[in-house]
Image (cartoon, rainbow, N blue to C red; front, top):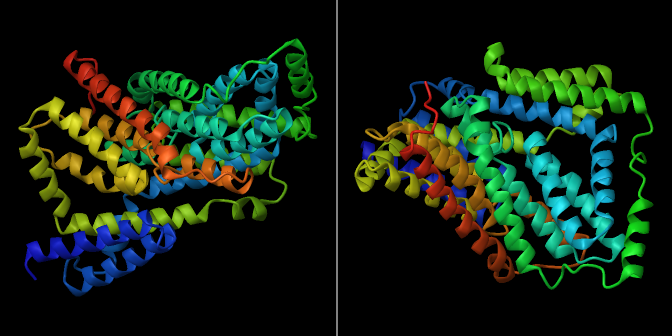
Length: 444
């Protein structure tokens, strides 16, 4: 079969898999594994790879990503069992006195901080559960609070190397040092959070009102003061150990480069220490690792790796290079907006996985701004639609199943879609400005 026909066949099967994911025709993990099985069989039969064992080599390039997910899953689950996150959340809520406006800001800030440390899924599960309890007790509307924390979580997903799964994938492929995320991504993540708060605060202004009188304010204060931050932390020793191990793991992530260790080693180290000093049931804890996500990534990495083997992604990268005319501002805008829009339609994880191999193929253009465009675009684009990111999926699931509110696409796009357009525009200007001023760190 000619190279062009191979590229057409493998590209079509990849798009078909993404279509099954985007339209929910199959569970995304089943779709990814099925796509991987079909492409692997074709790759061997058509001679794309010399022997089947090369599949293991393709998958081996991304084992560090899987290692970080497994290690942090164990760490976060046991830290959560200690009551640490519940304690911090209730402390934050009490500081607001139950005032809906201050509470809205505090929950976005808390979600942002928690996502930066724990990644999106555990942060959203912790805070969304808290939001449900708070809104019921204070008789507050669920929609603004759940959407607000979902958008804040997406804004935080590129704070550090391990804040979000697309970020982890891109950072690993680009070999971006952990500290560089603090230099480049963190400032814009904070800007994105401010934009998120101001926009959502205005959009939901009729739902978020200050207490009408002193009696109402007093009722809210008394309600939140009754919350017990120690309710889920009966073992103070376990609480302190969990906090210490989590702190050491975060430090490990920051200094992994200096220590010449991989982030997967640090994540596994934190997980093992937590099992050693806090784990009461090793089997139950390991069973709670999100194996669905692990298998999804496994299938996805094989699909993208095999499509790369037929040089389709190199061909697309060459076409994009010609389209931009080797202009960095054009390339940054193209990568930022394309990854953002595509993430809103499919899911930001497969979008990131597909575009990562294209960056090295963009010859004649510095790769640093392209990596950062992909980091920012794929994460910010997740806020545009109900299926764009796991944070939005979690928020809408909680809203429908716990609050009985089904939010339509039109209502969601009115807030998430407009917010995403603003953030993508700001991201493009930010990255172009950094590069033009010579403030973007180079990668070795």
